[in-house]
Image 1: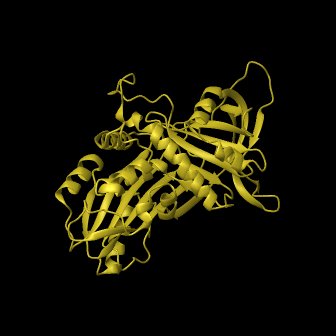
Image 2: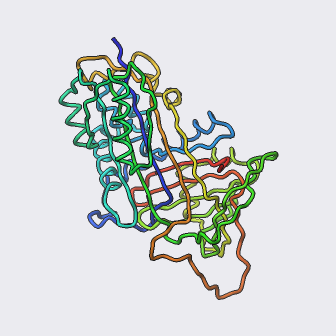
Image 3: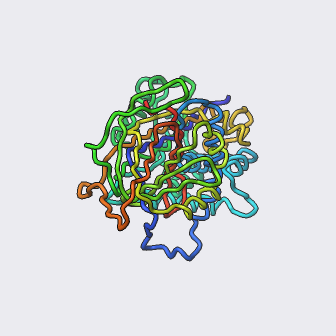
Length: 404
């Protein structure tokens, strides 16, 4: 009998990012670092998945945490066998003739530990949980490997009591995400006996916060015929800015206090698809090298967007076809049942507001040469990307079509 396996990947972001020059005091950046070896694969996978999601949701907001999805799928591969295992790892962009499975899991182990390290400038919680029917028992190898590499927490669940099971899972996720994700399950699939959850909660502070007194209601032009009112944050300061000569867009880069940074990309009118199609590691590298400090009068919506996606079909289109068929082999998880994937659900939330460090004040800059600031208004659809510049991984990718 095939028993559904549900995988839920959760990432919550509330406010902010991390600085480019952050250092790990225990790591020599000149040496080979497993977590950085993963970055090219993770970023390539991130942009491929992002483009698939954007194409499947025309005119809608899109927001995902690519590294969260990569980590959860890599963890799931520990319970896969045969072609299913190969598909999962190759689908994530890994060449298994060049990178061993052990190196992949060691890289994610290091990445998870780095993201979980304490930092007084942000709140962060990252983890994995498996809710397993009381009638099933995990194989020792899967239990040991997932605990070792991903610190998977296994919780016995009575899936015959659906109301009780949903309350257990919802309460667990609520506690782990500091109350930011609530009521994930309103009704469980009665055939589910195993649910895998990956969660990440992140709350940071701008290195140079916006002054709430400067936030004003302004127009946001959704398209040629739709205009909405949004609270628009603003600051006039020295900001990394680029008017791209190769792509029809302009962008700014803002830092968080801690270990991250954000790119806000404003495509020219009608050029969103052109810009998204060009997103790649090379594009990000070129932008990073071309940004210059400019006097910018910046306006960005105070926005909260969220989205939930069943990635099963999209991952199938990306080559992980066993996820959409009954031929998947997850016999490495439990002996008692043959598992199939019924859902691969990812939920992400983005909140952007003015908050910075308590001791921080809005940036004030004096220019030697008097000049009018360059006005940059994110008052039409834009792209937002959040990176950890120590691990070189893509934390969040988003397309904001309508901030309301």
